[in-house]
Image 1 (cartoon, one colour):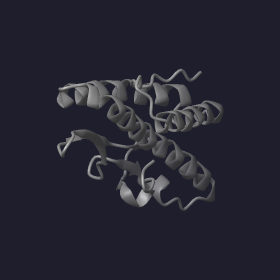
Image 2 (cartoon, one colour):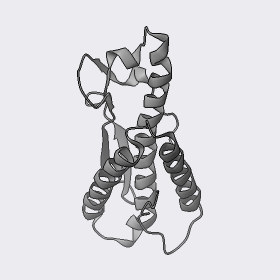
Image 3 (cartoon, helix red, strand yellow):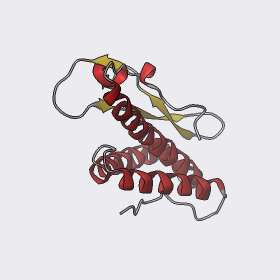
Image 4 (cartoon, helix red, strand yellow):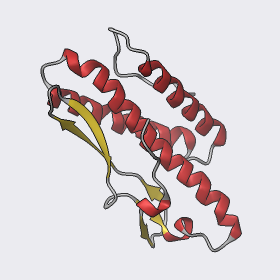
Length: 156
C-alpha cells in the first residue's frame, strides 16, 4: 500500500469543458539496486482536475468532488497493485524492461476498463466492486507464493 493517497492539492487545476473531469497520470519505473524492481511515480505535471471539482464553491459539487477524488485514488491504487504484483514475479525474469513494458500495457488496459465499468466513478456499485477487488488482490499479493503472476481483474 502507498504511504498516502493523492489529494486534489496534488493535481493541477484546469479550466476545461467536456469530459473527463480529472485525470491521474502514473509513471512506472524500473529501479536498479541489488535486484531490480518496479515502482510508480504520481506525475503531478500530467495529473489534472477541473477547477470546479478541486475547490467546489457550490455545495452540490462537494459530493461529486469527493466521489471523483475517490475514483482517481482508485487509479492510483490499481497502479500500485500492478507494480507490487510485478515485483512478485520480476525476480524470475532476466529482463526488467520487458516486465516494465508488460505492466504498462496491462495498466493501460485495466485503467480503461476501470473507467468504463465505473463510468468514471459515477456507478457506485461498480466502483465498490473494483475497490473490493483491488483490496482483495493487495491482500493476496501480500502472501508470498512461488507462482505469483500479474493479477487479472474480473470485476463485473
